[in-house]
Image 1 (cartoon, rainbow, N blue to C red):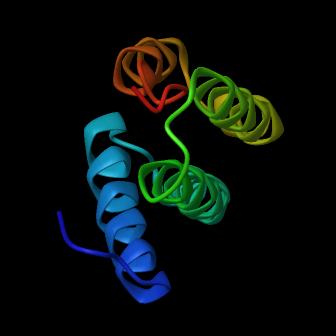
Image 2: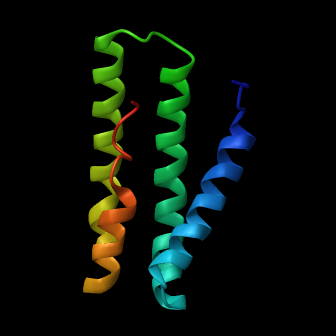
Length: 103
């Protein structure tokens, strides 16, 4: 598996953001609110996952990484979901399953 640099993480997060926005069928107004939050969330999550992938694989390290991912989600999710309608919220819930785990 190759090493990813910060620019790779930013490109990956940006691509994911665009795919998620499309899947949620956000309005332009929703996109203006959600896109920067989602970009930041995905970049922070990718950084934690990269750090875990390149470092200690102990159960303690895994638990620490998973707790960091949960904290990142907590930081952003309420602001993201507050802009979604019920159908988008259901889709968001389906899309975001598994994001809070490194394994």
